[in-house]
Amino acid sequence: MAAKGQKLTIEEKMKFIETQTEETALPALRELTLKNGCEYSCAIGPDGKVLDLVEGGKDENGRDVVRVPEIVDKAEPNSIILCHSHPDNTCFSIDDLNILCGYTAIKEMRVIGKNGKTYTLSVGEGKRPTADDLANTYKSIGADIYKPIGMKLEAKEITWEDAMAQLSIGIVERMVDECKWIKRWPTP
Ligand SMILES: [Zn+2]
Image (tube, rainbow, N blue to C red; front, side, top):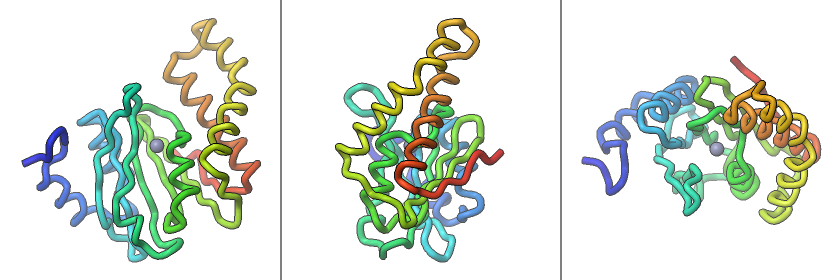
């Protein structure tokens, strides 16, 4: 039985929680995304075990949105690794950065794209800007670095999907510098 609108059955969810670990979670989330087309997010506790798995949805503009497992709300500071999967090859979205900065329980955030590339980010001693500040910075860096990517797109040297991936990686790398976050990527 699946919950209303959910593609993942309760049995699949329980099996994931019981069998996946910190080491295996990202590729397993990617498999689910390739199968069902939406984002998946799981919280991993200090012992490396999966605590919960949730399915993402779409917002009113049809954009993929990641949901945060409820357990992250109640967890101790710096205790959770939040892993999720993207249906495209983009790096962290503005929503992801909001989640990372908004929940002190998140020690580290990891994302895996459709192509299997993974990105890992933590705040460390860095800044936690407000949602408004994050949105403004994300937008202004995007406007700043879009031009060369847009030109390649127009010349059909890259696909739309590649362009969006390059743009998101460029934006997040600049934000990492500005906010003094800690990043680990790219990893194969
Ligand atoms: Zn994301």
